Length: 396
Image (cartoon, rainbow, N blue to C red; front, top):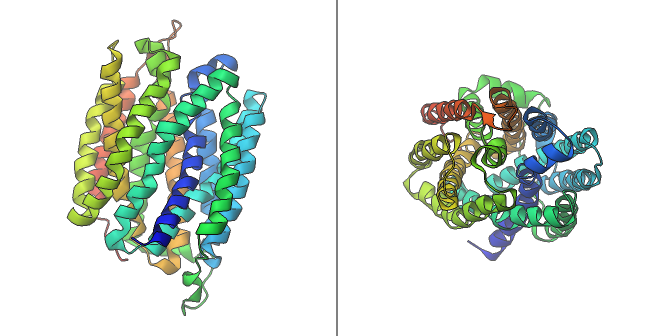
């Protein structure tokens, strides 16, 4: 890997880091926000899902123009809007305004993920793509190790607004990195392919079963993933007696483990095949899902072991998934397809969050019941994805 490639991946990882921290920090703040705003779990779930719904809509709209512009310029526009939305979250004084700010952040955040993946797929051939995706995915790990614990520390010290101000400030610096280290990416604009209708991205997907299956895979993976994630922290606090101040340990331990596991999974997927590695980690991920959603009061170290496995296995199935999905379309049409894929993923996240919120019940004692049903739903989705992924074939 050349120095330019490393700097490109570092910058994209920084983009993902700020983007992921902004999204992730809200979930461990759940117990605080539910108390401060006097809201129920389903209302908190709506705060989380508002971002995803807005991002899904904006990602869908982006699909019609994504391949008509330089990918670097599109990323800069999206990232600027994301910064504005993040500062808006930090300034939000009420529950309603927080939802509005999350919608603004989601509108532009929904454009970021697809652009990052499109840039990686354009710059790295399929044979090396999972390794590049593994490096990008370490942003999730660093966000868990540094971003979330740091954000929770700032929230405990200065109030829940502080993490959003910090992420906004860091994002300004990352914007400078984008301008310096990401080259203009416009090779797809030089194609001799005749100009097509903006709606061709939709008709292409509908006419291509392979692309439809890839979108289905993204949907099912997100349904299994985000039906349980937003409620891990609230359930640990309400049901297990886990201390609010110790929530950061889950993200710290899980993030540290995946910093090492993510690049390894990427290299394995390139060497042994994306699908076989996906299957292994998908099946393994059902074990910690079952344990997390059926927990009873247990020592801290046991909880950290279970959550650590959850991070490793969940992260391990996402890396080959991203590589497989990015390979079902050619570079000329990749931006539009990845925008649709991002939109589908985000909408699935929002739906999954609300499914989880609709299933669980908070008793008058504060106990959160029926979380195990959410776990069974998540495991069913993950196992279904194993069968669907086998039919997703790369074309580039």
